[in-house]
Amino acid sequence: MKAEFTLITDTGSQALVADISQLVVAGWAGRDRAAIDHHIEELAAIGVPRPSSVPLYYRIGHNQLTQEENLQVLGGDSSGEVETFVFAVNGELFVSISSDHTDRKLESVSVAFSKQACIKPVGRDAWRHADVAEYWDELVVRAWIEENGERVLYQEGTLDSLQNPLDLIAGYVGGAGTLPDGTGMTCGTMGAIGGIRPSAVFDMELFDPRRKRSIRHRYVTDSLPVIA
Image 1 (cartoon, one colour):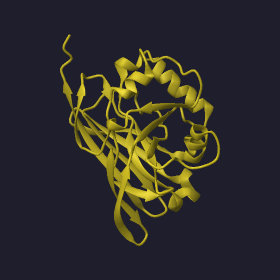
Image 2 (cartoon, one colour):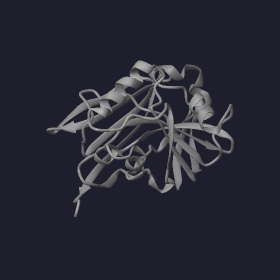
Image 3 (cartoon, helix red, strand yellow):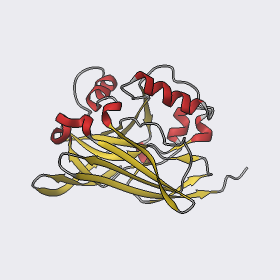
Image 4 (cartoon, helix red, strand yellow):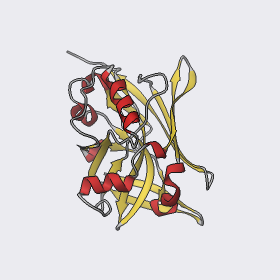
């Protein structure tokens, strides 16, 4: 999948094209074991099996990655999760934002199948990882949903609650190093405020408090009928 980004730097912007041929979802990627256990229990409450180990790396078909804003999903049981998205181009690591959109009903049967079944929206802007690596833990991710016509804060937190992407990459590739060119990885999420629930609108943000800039992406889902 060819993903086209606008690379934002301190001196301006330029086009950046990433040919994503491998897509990885890093699950159960919390840094604080108590927070991981909270998310495990949060999902267990809706019937999701507990993981065999943490973190886990789910390979997803790269065709599931999209930068579109109007999407179709099957049924009404899926929901988004805001995550940072790291990817490699010409040996360099870049950062954007993504949603690990997941079918919650299918998740109670198989987490891997539930993730593969849903599209993975990713933003259109990116930063160099090197520009934010020194203060990665200070970055903030947020997501909003719509309920009864109102915009509601759904997730929010600093990245110090999640594993550093370099540690996740090391766990995936089996040692120190960066992602292979053409590989993209979502880097874990945090608990939902008020519990996991679906929304046709998912609005997400990665905020850099030092440079006072954000990467944002909003998408809307149309639920297709489940025909038996």
